[in-house]
Image 1 (tube, rainbow over the protein chains, first blue to last red):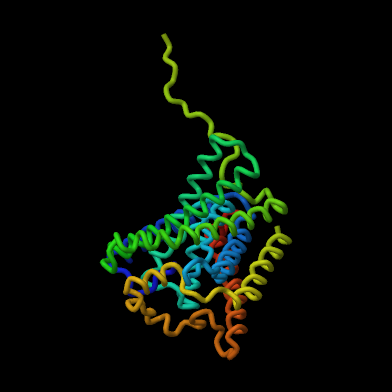
Image 2 (spheres, rainbow over the protein chains, first blue to last red):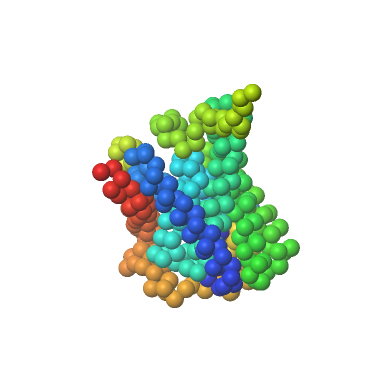
Length: 227
Length: 97
């Protein structure tokens, strides 16, 4: 789903670059303030795994292939903002070293393959933590649903970027992108759930540590007034 | 954590080296849509990408395409690990002191 240079208008490139830079900025702030010393190696290995898995295109119907994105998996391990940072590192390396994905399109690629999926999965995870029991099956279901949604929403984001740029009409590109990525998203879900299952068997402490296990303490809405 | 890091990095490297030469070569979702709807030829590499060290995941100076892809996977996975860990470490510098 890497957009090359030439597909996007200057305005779309600049706008998405601002959004991507904002997400990376939040991530760097979080990295500096989080007390967990496992963060540095975990961010490195998550990036390496995402890079490796993104190389492994799998066939989907109709002479098309798809590849893993990794935003949902990175979110389960590191939380949504640091997942954006992981994807930004992977996508920048792919663009500058391997000429995969445009340079001026880097912001759009970070938004569509990173930020959107990370926020979707992070939102699902936080919602699940509030209403569902903290169980292995629940976590895997959230990860699988987040992975599928991340790919489909990222494909929609890519279609919108192309349409706003005037490259192709939204009514043409949106259904086409969604049709292919509904299937690619299933592959994303399978890989995400498989990787998380393997991690749960070995290092369950690394999964979802960013999301609080207990519900947040109730906020004081109003102080009782003395009569 | 050190043991986990080494094992997980090894898994990533093995995936990148052993499987990437056999990845599907069909166009991906966006490439396919771009070809079908007539905007694929708008794509062009940026000027800095013409000098990218390993364009299209081919390690430079290696004739065998599969070996070149495998080596690109090895270099990329290790490079992303180093870059990711460094980027995470920079805002933390001095905090532990």
